[in-house]
Length: 58
Image 1 (tube, rainbow, N blue to C red):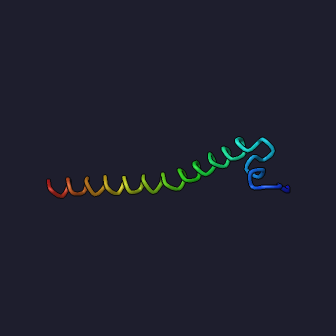
Image 2: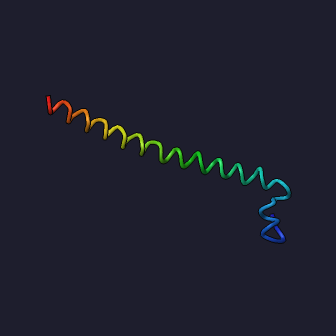
Image 3: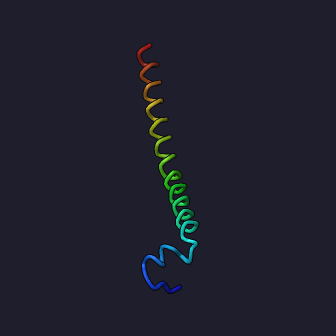
């Protein structure tokens, strides 16, 4: 595909909002898939550390 200007590229032949929103949604989903396990692991480790401290203090 050849575009005459950058604004034509962004407009994508009047399909720009659909194309760019699809890219944005895809990037958001990928980011969630990367960040979610990291946050879950950190939360799990914190909860386990709390549980071990409680058991050690009994």
